[in-house]
Length: 477
Ligand code: FCB
Image 1 (cartoon, rainbow, N blue to C red):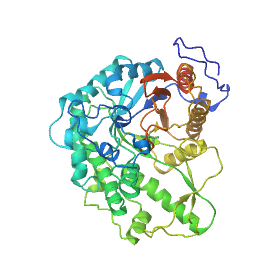
Image 2: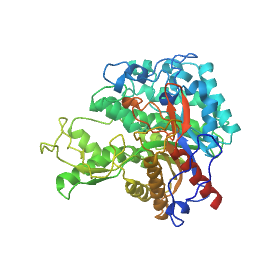
Image 3: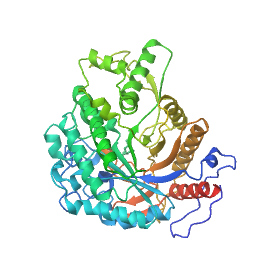
Image 4: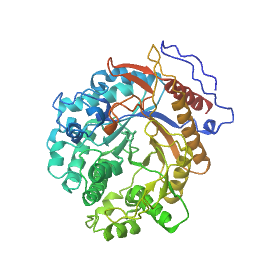
């Protein structure tokens, strides 16, 4: 594709050419184009205007928990630079910005009245976006649970679901008149499993039973919030949840590998999709968990609540799996008794995260979702890649690897649409380089480079490429 030089001083021509007959050009003019971020990863200002600590503030202080002992105290200083960041989005010509609200900023401690000073930040952000023609898309929970709620039991405790629904309404009361799309939770799998089972994310607990209880209470919180948001929302408001999903083929046709792939799909995908979209937990996963003494703490009525109708399924996709049912020593069961589920490399190139680049997995996933869970529109709420960016003397990054990644994944979305998947938009992860959780600031996912010394932002080549593709698709309609 030929791109016109941008008037901004940092602009460079996008390098990738996209053929006239590329599937990307089949995306409709109405396709949604945006970027995503989350509060703890960019805001900083963790103790300003009444914000109290979240589990991530606490976790970052645990020695060895986060690479280089990094933390979100300053991050991208977005709390103080918000108008500049909104201008970046608008200047890229994008129509949607998905951001998350920090619960401990809006409701310090996770209970009680709203903190007006904290809420005012999101009020300004929403107005700034609207004034620049960018649609706000709120995620209510992107992992920053108020520490006091963790101290009271965290997500393994049922009460947290009710606290979440109350908090959702505080935000909605203030912003519901201007925000058309609401995501309750971002990636409950990561919040529950990485946080409460594997222990590599906050709050760093390691207990499968706690993690499974956390799954249920996160989903219950989603359902309770969805019911209340629905009742309070204007007609046409879009409500949804964002799940991170990945297809997983068995490494071989052996019964062991096929069983491991089934369980990986159960624990990774169906454990979330089925209750939300079908009102039931998958029988095979329930049975597997019961065999190792873990029960999902379901009470009568919970599944009706969890399956409250939604309008959009947010899909976060990063990679696919090739699942083996044996570990390096040839063992077939984990210490907890569940079958081994090991993701084997396929030899494809990887990103700086070590994640294999598998765009065809996205097509496969979206086609399958459309088939197995029909009738629910989808939006890619996150997709992107970390690479070891090399800025030039001006801070510009000619990130052709990221350009290719974005192009391949847009193509994968277009192919899924051609095969019937109802995918309505793509939100790139991420607007800015940011705090990548346990990886700290070492991994850069931004379309826009952040120099953490100066907080200077410089759009990378991928940002310009993304801008130009979105513009051309829109104009073709
Ligand atoms: C997702 C998270 C997001 C970001 C990307 C790389 O799992 O939702 O915050 O860290 O991974």
